[in-house]
Image (cartoon, rainbow, N blue to C red):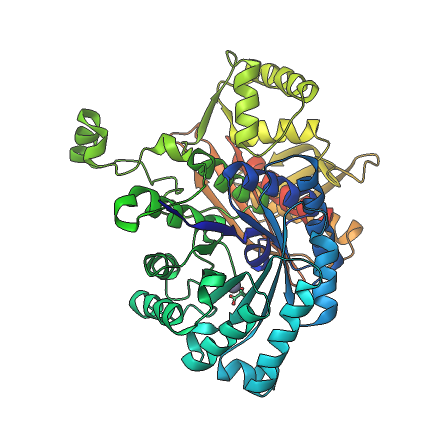
Length: 509
Ligand code: KIV
Ligand code: ZN
């Protein structure tokens, strides 16, 4: 059966989206998970965009040098010599590397954005591919905004770049404008009207502005596309890119219809999705296909009855085969070293034997105090061991005073930059407000940048007065958005945990 290549751009198009920014170590961690997931190509970043992007792409390429079995490591570049050279400088360490260059192809983009005549754009595209080929043999070319380009111009651009050596031509629906039939027709048109199209891999890259990114990608595959560009959890610019998990599970579940296969190791989908959520703090909606918390929950009695009798009555996919899990990780007093190692790997950690033993001992100590150990608990313990918990602001203690006759007051003891701890007092409308007011005093005193609290949200994870509450905080500093999420039975501690997590994430880079 024909194989469709999975080109993952979570670390490039996905990371470009507000709130999805990752630190360099976080990008490396995600790249390891993408390797376990079995993607064919990792687009690791846009090396000319910033020093951080360059460092991340080159370090991921160096990781790929250390052991066999890594995907192709790709970097993005505009049609400029300095972009292309910088991109090569970053990706070159990977045994298999790719330069991905793009230029606008629609009239509106050429005229208004590039301010360039179509003939000049064609020339630049061809020269850039030739230049990229002087560094490496694997060159991908994208005519940006292809779905709004004149078809004959697009076909000529694709023909020309293949003639000068492009090995993959990627057709992007940059603004998410196309419809499945129309997009499939465009791919067929190119397949029939570009004489040398067979010399390159035809790829597609769809945005989700009209909610059709996955449908368009699948229609293009049906029309003969051999590579599909996707992001975990549907991350990406604006409404995002086609979701990796949805494209892959469509192809797998409806294999006889699509007649193609992928190299994706589907049990790694759940861990990959959860890792991205954990690193960015951006949760997926509960009803999201494949990876949403409700994707395999059956509420209606008639459905539950059916599933108990025969799972396939209401389940078209086996949740175990996509590494799907509920909220509890089932880790506790009786978990063995092996079980903990497996869970850590699922969460995207790559611990050595010494680190596993260390985390195991911490889990056992915690299990003495707490019946259920949640993902967040295990991650906190693991991050302590990995030394990633170098929190600039650490909570030492918090006391709350509230009642009908006093203004809610929080006395928060914090340690900043490892210095001696000190106390701040905050007053507010309620205990959470008072606690946040106290933390804001610390921000004003020690962190001299403007940090705004954009979103605060609290939800119950379980039922009853002893329920677990999950707090979510989104902070904004300049253009940067960061998020924190924390779970606790105490709403003040859940809220404070989320606030400090977001703050520390902001201060880490
Ligand atoms: O959406 C787009 O056009 C892109 C290109 C760089 C492929 O992301
Ligand atoms: Zn894109």
